[in-house]
Length: 452
Image 1 (cartoon, rainbow, N blue to C red):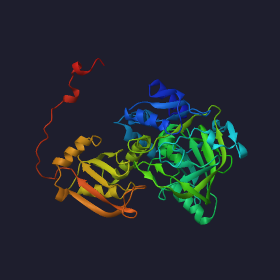
Image 2 (cartoon, rainbow, N blue to C red; image 1 turned 180 degrees about the vertical axis):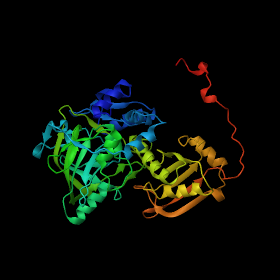
Image 3 (tube, rainbow, N blue to C red; image 1 turned 45 degrees about the vertical axis):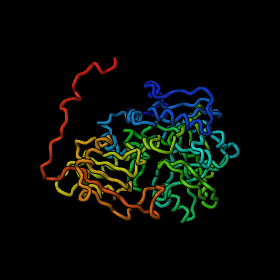
């Protein structure tokens, strides 16, 4: 059975020693981020900050490493891509929650709305202010009414106003652009504290016409239970910890940013639309959620990686069935550096696969194709293939004027170039055998197990 809500997942993490309570006072300004960065650096646990200056505990780092991501998916490295692909290919529609929704046990409207009472951290020294980084935005296409859920950032301006940013090629950004052009109101809801499969579904790469609640249901293997928002016609997850309802105000533009982003660099500040909060609802003993962003590897990279890999792998395998694995590296922001494992069926097929990856909405700068004997997640093996299976003059090529990844700090006026590297052995040509010790992986050597 899927995790019903955030609390069920937290219970599993506690039982696995993957969640630790911090019971001493920790400041929301910088110190939360310092603690998360330190735990992440040693592959440590998620952290629950019990004393953060507000009445709500703050949990963060839930998906701070791939180990916890696999726990969330109830999967292993061997089965994870198949698990996600199966979910994508078997969507399940949402259902209406019967009865009063847990996410609306406490309702705050009008003068009772106060964002400053929430434990919203300031993560980096040059950030424009406190940021909600773990919020999942629910919005609808103004033309079609199709709902989108996605992970977007919000800067806290004051007690009732947030700064809004979404890259223009993302669905929330497109929804805002359409609403502004048509001069209609765009309502949204920030969902905070939700079951892990719904959180991961936000990262699945799918068409703009897709109803994301069906994608989330497919990953969960069960319908998402929804309830009506209070101040709009949107539907929101009934078991969320917090719902922040808002309407976008394109006429009230305020300075938003900087923020340390997934590239590892600050995005510069600029005037952007605001979100005027119309209601805050939450569970009686609600848990707020944070998420560290910045120089890889941080939690947002882990959150993106598995859904990105599985959905792009699915797209590529439809054209190249001998592709067996893909790594969209965290060091490249889970965006610009891609390694693909495939067994080419004919000369030049690896190059075709590289071009297909470049044409995907990842917009990678680097695409490397290796053979299945190479572990795409081990840089030493990929570098070995690049060192001894590549003739740079023949196997390396550059495609100019390609689309740039969102927020890339180093582009040529909005576009870039991409490098393809065919690190497969030459097709149909004799090549030396690999020198490797056979069966060492299964060799029993208890002397080095250190008592385990």
